Image (cartoon, rainbow, N blue to C red; front, top):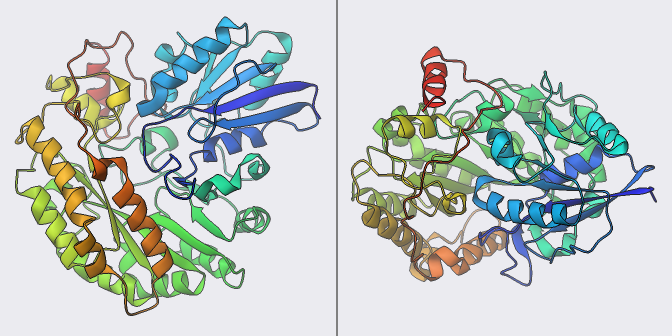
Length: 469
C-alpha cells in the first residue's frame, strides 16, 4: 500500500442513466476519465480511493493527501461544493474534466489546481508538486498525447455490480466532424489519434468484462482503422457497442466485420431529420433521406440502433417533435435519446448565442440537455419543453415498445428490453421537469477558454470577439 492517499471523486448528477434505477444498477458508469487518471498514479507510492457519488456517499472524514474531482458542466456545481468542503478541512483539491478544462479560472476559485485537457502528460508534475506542497495553478500539456503506451485504466477500483455498462475503452481520441454544438474538437482535436491495436487488445483482454463500450467520439471515423480493430476483436468472445456516425455505417464490409467481432449496438448521432438543420450545425455527414435505409441495413446484421436526436435548433418548429418520433417508430429504431440543444460554455454554439444575446441562464445545473437555457429561435421555451417531454413519452409508450420489439432477426432482445425499460423508467418519461425553462441569471464573471482553438478563421474570430464582452 502506498504511503500517500489520493481520493478521486465523480460528483452526483441528476441523470437517470447514472443513478441506480434498475436492480440497484445504473445504466452507465461515468468513471472512464477517473480510471485513466488513476492509472497515472504509481501504485507503489499512492493508494487510490474512488467514489462515484451516484451510487455511494462521499466520506469527507477520510484522511487523504489530495482529492481529485472530475466534472461535466451539469454537475460541476456539486463538484465545487465537494471541493470547498475538502479544502475547508485543509486537503488540497485538483479538478479536471470537460467543464474545468473550459472554465479554468472559475474552477480555480474552488480548487487549488486544474488539469486542462488530457491528464496523462501532466500527472507526473502534479504528483511532484503534491510531494513538495506546491500544488497550484493550471496544469496543461503543450502537446496532445500520442496515444502510445497508455497505462491500463484501474478497473479494479470500479464497483462492477452497480452498473450495467461499466467498461469504456478508447481506441482513439479526437473527431474530424467539427459539429458546432460539440466540445470534442476543442478538447481533443480535429484529427484522430489512434492507440496501437495490440495495446487496445491487451486492455480488452485484461479488463475483466465481456460487454464493453468502445469509447471513441466516432469509432467508424475512417475506412481503414475500425476494420483493423474489429479483425483483432474476432474470436475474443467480446460483445461490444460503439458510437459512430452515419456515413461509414452504410458500408457492408464494415457492418459484417462489426457483427462477426461481437457488435450488438451502434449509437449514432442522427441529431435531426432535417437536412437544413444538419447543415446549419456543420453535420453534413448525415443524410436524412437515407436514415431509414441505414437502420434497416444495420438491423440486417443483427445490430441494435440507438438513435441520438436533438431539439431546439434554429430551424425547428412545433412540428419537429411528433414528426421525428413518428419517423423513429416507423423506421423501427430500437432506442432513441432526445435532448434539448445545450450551448455548453466554450463551444461554437455558445459563442454564436452569446454574440446574438440569446443566452438566458448560466446556472450550470441546468446544462443537462433537458433544461432550456437560451432563447429558441422559432419555438417558445414552453413549446420546446412540452415537445421534448412528449417525444420521450410517445417513443417509450408501451404500444411503441411492443411494435418495435425485434421478434425476427438476431438483434439482442435482452439488450433491447434493458434499454427500453431504463428509458421508460427514467425521470424524463415519468414526470415533467417543472423548472425546465431555466430562470435568467447574470453573465458569469469568468469566460470560457477552449483548451484548443478552432481551426476555421471565422470561428477563431468568433471566440476572440466573445471573450472580450
